[in-house]
Length: 332
Image 1 (cartoon, helix red, strand yellow):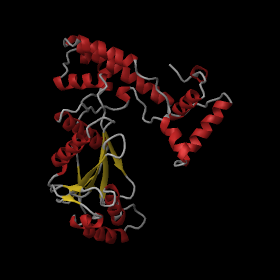
Image 2: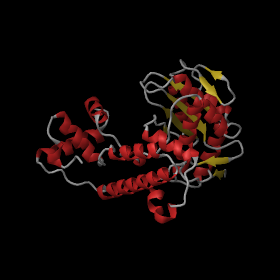
Image 3: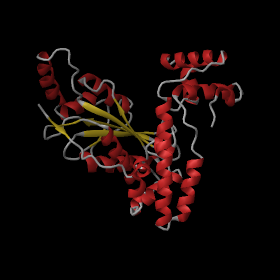
Image 4: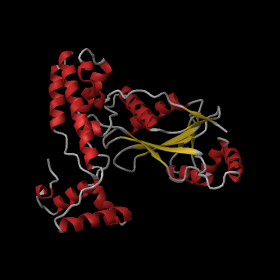
């Protein structure tokens, strides 16, 4: 059985909540230059990088091959591999065989015979790296290339390709889950946090403004149910979204938007984040960064009111119907 790769667990560069909890213990603390710059990028709303893991059909050799063909647009786009080679055509399965995934899959299938009912482990990880519209696509591609070389070269086989058919340039990367040394990579929250930070750093090295900060720190919710809700609903592409919209619309029509579980936790998280930001303003003032401390206070004051998924849908529905949001207690 392959060993499991363990990423060193590092404290987030901008762990806002810990500052708020520090109290008197923070009085003698000094912010590093890197932390000050991270704060500056955050309050100036530098573009935030996105790193996603696409989980479906990652544990089947045929499906993984089809995904490679899909991201290459059936061979119209050339895949770049970890050895720097540009490969065109529909080469999904052939490339995976080059990585010995056919052998890995045969061994895995034999092992599964003795452990029926268990979910088979992933053969590949399907990642996507993206930036907001307006970011130079060539810089996004170069940043992912440099990131992948630093993180995976000589350990995990990989291939990637740039997509520019949407407003936001993004790169799809397929990564062999088991390294050449037989170590399995399991992606955790800390792994994604580290990858986001490194992707942003590589973009900045190329002269692209980029940041990697958690949503809660920026005062944003985990989901954004505005225009996307209605686009998916109109296309009929999401039964879940359509059902959610219909339920919320019915509750609004009755004037009774029922509270959603998790609201109190959401509000508590916001309190913790605001307390942390206020503690940072004191540290910034003590460190002579008074202008940045003012920017932080203004940043916190401008944070949108925290809303659950249901409240986001309701807010968007009310905006579309031009009804005041105060009646549903959805505004600050």
